[in-house]
Image (tube, rainbow, N blue to C red; front, side):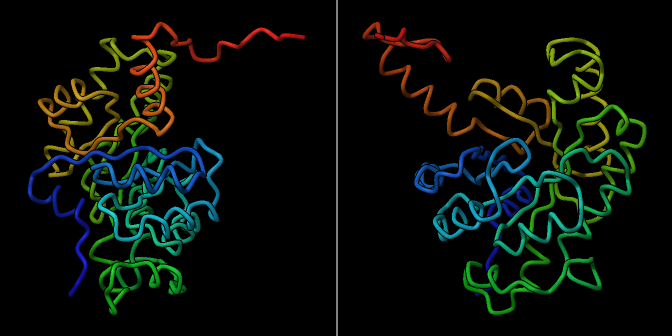
Length: 265
């Protein structure tokens, strides 16, 4: 039976998906989170110490679980996509997709010739791929390609970027976009809202799924009303903090992040 990427299928069916963000190389944590009910794992390799070796261990540990592994690579390059795909991920997230050429490169990086430029050394990926002997064809059909728009330069060619064949999701990197606009991370400001609206409108015109971060269920529902369907959820550290504080605050024992105990010596 040919494996089907459940995230890709849900998006094609008009549904929304949410992933938990993994920023630490702890395989036990990733495996536990993969079993909670998230649709995918956003394995963060741009802003975390996760290495290719750690990524491979996470892929092995979460094989067959409901949340399928995606990786955000450190840079939009062919070789970075090859490495994570050969580690067995089912989707690649490409940061700073600033031009139509960047978007085309992302799409080509995730498919074998003649449809793309991916190299054929996929022995490790075949071992962890969910049970399909025709890996190459199955991978070409099922790898999810996510391009991240997070620089003001992308706005000038947003229609070309969002119309790129082979790109499944256009994800708005809201914080970096704010910095690129000179807003230093501010998010509830008209300039950023206008830029986001422009990207969403282009995605609608070109029939592309649009995504963004969502830090809470309330925010996710609000963003759904705006047309978003692909969501990066909290990190494992955020979920740990939320659960720990929820337990400790009623006991009067919660502490602020980074607060240190005074030395006894």
